[in-house]
Each structure stands twice: as structure tokens, then as C-alpha cells.
Figure 1 (cartoon, rainbow, N blue to C red):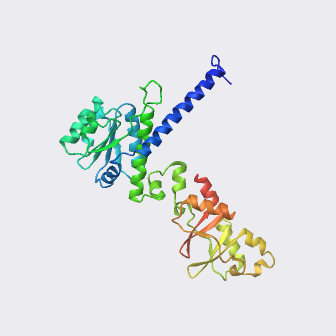
Figure 2: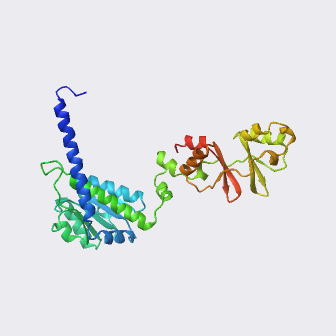
Figure 3: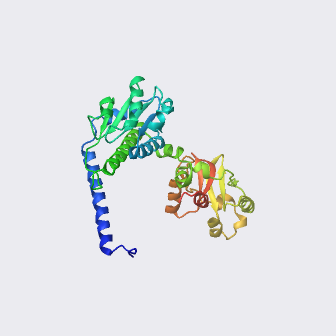
Length: 323
């Protein structure tokens, strides 16, 4: 429903404008992909070999983009820190160490607030990576390495609102972070180390973190009367049959129902499922959940080789927020 004072024509025009902006920015990203900065590979190698951190900086909208790039780098294995250039001029320059490199973002390359930091990098031989659309700017002339983005029209239609330029800058920052994580061999498990909280942290958790370590263990020759007591005492709805330290089978509530005839006259080996599903303790919790769902099971044994070390229940995964 249109708001009071906003006609259907106005809404249609707004939709058209939105589509125009998105197409303009999408075209800019394609142009950037087709004309990647010549120094991109060199920048990746320089950052990958840094003994220190990447100091990312910028002012205004470029500063907001710089913060995001620094956060993405840090979360994907490249130590990074955003430093505000104005604050740097008033004491925070000390955050830039001799082993660091500075990634400085300015579409024009002429922001006055950046000049003190540029001078600092030149004075102390700190590598300076410039990201700008103007190769002949003060920033790019001073920089050791250059990430030059195409000088394309902003999507605002009046040529002054940072839109196309910030989108390209943000995307180039993502490209840099992903190139670095692949260069380092960064894995999903490594990503989980930097994201221990929330749903993402749960999905990146290992099975060992969520499993029950107390096992209802019985020997193959254990009478079923004792097996039932063991199952009841632990309350996980199963018993783990172990022979000489190795998994020999599992007894679940389903196995009990299938063997009701003369159940008490049998042993654990008579009733157990001999080759049950198992998962390793270093498997990602999300992978274990997918396996349980595929097999339509609620519980599985966690084994280190053939040695049972825990029990993983689907309720534990759901409670942790893995789903």
C-alpha cells in the first residue's frame, strides 16, 4: 500500500531508480573484474609475507569501507587493524609498527587528513598500499603499491555521492581477503576459531566439543538384564558394545524392540547392531548433523579410529544452534 502523499507512479519511479543504481554498480564491478589492478598479485604477496599487521585507513565513506575491509582481513587469517587518520595525527600513529603495512583508501587520493600518515610511512619506511581511482593523485604517487579502481560515474546521478566507487572498493577488499585466505590455505575450521559465538560458531564447532564423553559401555557377553540397567543409568537411549577397546556394536531402543522375544535370555552381542554409524571427533558439527539427517538417525557413536570416545545426539546439535 502506498504511503499518504506517495502515488503509485512515485513508487514505480523509485523502483526504476533502485534498479538503475544496482545495474550501474553491477556494471562497475564487472569493469573492475575485467581491469584488475596491475599490482594486485604483488599486494597479496607483500601482505602474505608481513611479519606485522595490515593497517587499513581512510576518511569519510572510505573510512567506513576501510573498517569493513580490516574486519574481513582479520576474520580470515590476516591480522589487520583500522586506524582513523585524524586520530593518527593526534597520537595514534604509534599503532603503526615497523613490521606493518598501510592500506590507504581514498577515491580522490587527495584527502588532506591522510597527509600526516602518508608522511609517517615515508619517514619510517612502512610499506604503503594506495587504493584510489586516480593514479596521478598525491596518495598514489607516494604509494609503493597501487590498487587502482576504474574512474566510473557514481550511481547517484549527480556525480558526488560515493556509491559506485565505494562498492568497487568494498568488493576489491573482499577480493584481497579471499585471495589471501586461499594463499594461506585458510580452512573453514580456521574461520571458526575467529567466530566462536552465535550460529556460525556452532556450525564451525567440532563434534568433540558437543559430544557426551560418558559412555554406557558393555562387553559383548554382558547379559541383557545388565545392558538395560546400563542404558537406563546414562539416559542416552543406547549402550555401546566394546571388545578389547574397539567398537563391536551398539544397542538402541530399536534393537530392543526388534529382539523382544527371549530378550532377557540373550547377551549384548546377540542384540547389537554390529556395524553402526560413527563419526570422528574432529568432524564439523554441521557435517555430523547432515549425516544424521540423511540417515534419519538421532544419535551416533564418536570414534577415534575404532575406539569409541563419545556419543553425539541430534538434540545436542540443535541445542547448540547448529541447525
